[in-house]
Structures are given as C-alpha cells and as structure tokens.
Length: 332
Length: 295
Image 1 (cartoon, each protein chain N blue to C red):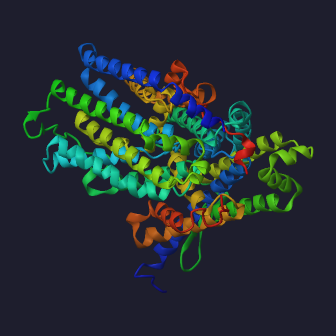
Image 2: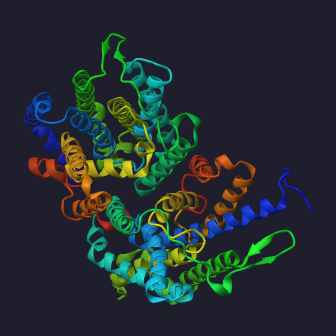
C-alpha cells in the first residue's frame, strides 16, 4: 500500500521534521508575543481560539481520517457552560473553562461512541445531525438565553487572585492555553498512539488485522478532539464575554472544516494558518456583510478542486497524498 | 368523537397532516440523495440549496414573468436539474477519483454560494407565495378540516416518489442504473455510457429537490434558509433508512414525518429533535439503517 510507504518516509525524515516543528512553534510563539504591539489584542485572541479549535478538529480529520461535520457542538456547548459558570455561578475562569471542557468531553464521548459505528460520509452526516440536536437544545434550554445568548460574561480573576478583566492581562492567559493545546496535540500526534491512529487512517482493515482495537482509538481521538474544541470554545466565551447560538450553529462546523482545509489537513500548523486567514477575512471583509458566506463557499470549491493540500501542505511539500482512493476499490 | 391522550382530534389530525407534509419533503429529498449516492457515491450537501432554488424559481416565475404555480411545477425542476448537470460536469466530476468526503465538501461550498447569494439579494425574512387558485380552500372531512393544497402536496409527492421507484425498478433505464450502481466498470464494458448516466442521475436527483422546492413554496414562505436546516434532518432520515434501498428512503421519509407530527402533539418540546433521537437509537441497534445493506 502506498500509504505505508508514506509512513515509512515520514519516520525516515523524523529528525528534520521534529526540528522543523520546533522552529515552527518558536516562530509562532515569537509572533504571538510581538503581535499585540501592532494588532488589536482581542482580534489576536480570537485568532488563537479558532486556531486551537481548528487544530483540535484537525486531530480528528487530519490524523484520524474522520470528518466530523458537527464540531460546533463541542465548541459551542463548552462556550455556554463556561459562560454560565462564570456569570451565574461566579466561578473563577480556570474552573469555568474546566467545566466547559468537561462538558465537551462528556458530549464527545456520547456522540463519538454512537457516530463511530458508521464511517466516511455517514459519519459526517451523523455528527452533523447530533450537532443540530445540540443546537436545538441550546435554542430552547432556559439557561442559554435563546437568541440573545449569554452576554456580559465576567472574565473574573485567575485562581481568584489575578484579574483578567483587561485585554493585556487576558492575552498571556489565552496564549498559554492555546500553546498548551497545540503542544498537547503535537505530542498526541507524535506518540505511539498517534502512529497507530495514522495507520488506521491509511488502512483500517490492516490495522484491525494487526490486532488494534480500531474503534477504541477512534473514540479516544474523538473525545480528545471534542475536549480541545471545548477548551477553545470556553476560552472564546471569556475573551468575548459572550456565548451565542452562532457558536453551536452548523455554519460554525463548516467554518472549522474550511480553516483546516485551506491551511492543510494533516499538518501541525496548517489549521493555525487557516484560522488566521479566515478570521482575518471575516474581520476585514465584514463590510461586505453576507457576501462573506459566498466568498467562503467559493474558497471551499477552489480548495477542494485545486488546492487539496492546503497552504502549509504545499509549502512543506511533506504531506501524504490526500487519501486518494480508486473509485472501483471503494465500491467493493 | 374520541380523544387521544386527552388531545382533541382536530389538533391530532392537524399535526399528523403537517407531519405527512414534512414527510413528503423528507421522502422526496432523501430519494434524490439516495439515487445520487447510489451512482456518484457522494452526499450532495447542496441538496437543500437546490430545493430552495426550486422554490425561488417558482417565485421568480410568478413575480417577474407572471407564470403561475403549475408552470413552475414543470419548469423549475428542469431548470434546477440542468443547473445540476452543469455543476456535475464542471465541478463534481473532477472528484470521482478522490475520497468521497471531498464531494461532500465541494457540494457544501456550492450550498454556501447559492444560499449566501440569495440571502444577500432577497434577505432572510422570506417571500410569500400564494396557494394557487384551483387548490385553495379546503374540505371538511368531519373529523378534521383538510386544506386542499396540503392534500395535493401529499398525493403529488407520493405519485412522484412511487413513479421514480417504478422507473428504477421496472424499466430498462432503471436496470442500467442499478447495474451501474453495483459495478460501473462492468456496465461500461457492455457499451453503456456510464459517465452520461452519472450526469443524468445527478440532474434527476437534483431536479427532484427542485420539484420539492416548488411544492414547498406555498406551504412555507420562500426563503434562502429554507433548505439549510431541512437538509440536516433529511441526512438523519437517510442515516435511519440506510441508502441501500430506494423504497426504504421513501417509506422512512413519510414514516418519520408522521412520527414528528405525533411528537408535536404529545410532547412539542421534543419535536425538533425526535428524528435525531431516533437516529441515535437506530445506530445503536442497526448501524446500517433500517433498510441498509451491510457495508
């Protein structure tokens, strides 16, 4: 199988890849530290939250080969829970975020264990349907504030001591969370667990025959991905002091797919680049109003037809062939 | 008259009829999805947008050309079908050698473009489309009042669904179609133009969506978002029914519409999620769907 050749190639150049990734993380950190001097910090924090969200999504799609079309459910539900915990229960930010993450993990465990019973396109449809269920729940539940959402969420004091009210204080906190999340994903991908996961992505039948409990790997990945998406969502709720229906809507699920696709799925930094690009586009093209949706649609079409490796995938050239399967084989 | 769990029969039958109407749209749309999936192996995410396009074409025809509903019923599905053929030839056909998920992403992009464009031009509030004159009014059945147009929707969609099924199961063209679904290479070797068959199938499947859109125009108002939420429910319907069987798609569509209507009577809060709950249960018990074949 070509896929296994690819894996061999990847391990063969692992030392280069590792030092390249270390450089990438260092560069990213420097940019993130310097950028607030030039750019509005809230905008940067938004980019970071979505970068983490997209990386969490990429863990599932790029490395697990599972296209979830309902990741807004974990992002959004965590956002609601964190906002509720901070505002109504008056909890500190770290506990609020923790509760948001736990919610996403719990939801991910339930949805994941049912969704992985189907594969491919069905998996995408099932996750989308469950996310829609979460959306309707958020629409009707008494504590989510319906169309208004939860507004004016206090940023609170970290550990009850350090006030995060100012953007300057919140920025390092969000930076630490995002970087912690990214490093965790990097560690997962490059662990023995991650190697098995990639093997399952490339050839599931073979992984099964080698004795791996494929579904267990998929479920763990799903839950990790959901939890990290929840981390991004909870943090976003504190940054914007807001949790709304937008966070759980299917268009949010579509956006995170787009970020990952345009940046390069299956790459470590691709989703970060994609998130930065899409958030910037939404910010600066906001004057165009609803046409942003059309532009996103066009980007989708162009990416799928001509640019499947994504920006980082093209730049590094170090990417597996994007899951090319012969039509006949898949019809067996 | 009798009461059902203390619910007046008027309300019960009214909701069941509404359920049947929704079921008609579920059935017609999931039928189109199933046909397209069978041959193209992609899930057409743009199906909801094409349904919406059908409704908009009906509205355009009435507003700008003065052509009434019955013209729209014929013309709109053809126009939507032709636009589908163009999309298939220009875009979708380039992805057949890739993983099916790319087809899903591509059609999602197309849906965003269609919905976004119409939303920018016509807003989200929805445009009214009057029930055509010959079908207005209603009939008193004794136990309930039956609006004529709703009866028309149920009957007409049933006719279209059943005739589509008959074409696929009983005609020569349908036999080619089924054969190409099983093994396109072998059918091609027999001298049948499979790429043409694929293109036409996409056109017909999408045309069915356009047809459903015209039917829906007088029931719901014509709005750019009308297909977006519907298509997600239809995906759930498709997962429940399994896409292996055309008849299965039809039966599941109507059945779930009725179940949804019944839920609206018994426990209204759950009506928007009942289909998703059923989907979860079906996945736990029978992962391939009620009518699905083993993968």
